[in-house]
Image 1: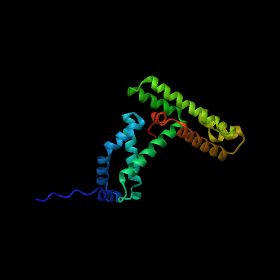
Image 2: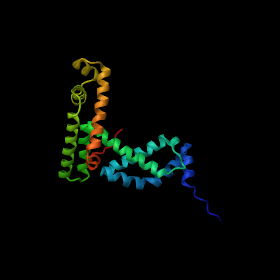
Image 3: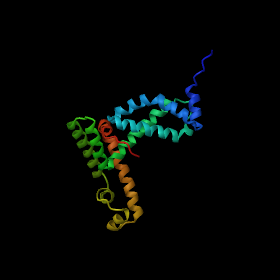
Length: 198
């Protein structure tokens, strides 16, 4: 009685690329434990790490046709995971409500309050520093739209500029803040604030 040969990872990847959901499930089960541990190092919160793992595998399924099964899949997977964590961190730069929601989750998971406060203060310091480096017009647009909740049309009317100009300033200001916190922040401060949203 001959035992059936187990398919190689390359063969399973080829099947997944072709849309085989069973092959995808097999890849998911194989990499889930190690990817979860890897992401947990960044975000510190088990429920967030689990959500990040799901996000990463969803992305893998969506872009499966771009995967080259002859190259290292684990290297590709971890690169996507790392980029996803950093994008998630960067997006927190402009959303205070999300930070507060994350702090609640951290508190429920037993993270020490003094450490949490220290991280939050460091993050807020970087956020304020980023604002201080913006041009006055961009800062005005950011404060009106993001901090006062004005629509692009309302901000345009107040500042006497076009709606498109307001939109452009918002895109550039948010990108600048994210990049600033990303470049100047201690990665532990940034990772501490990781949350799952896209």
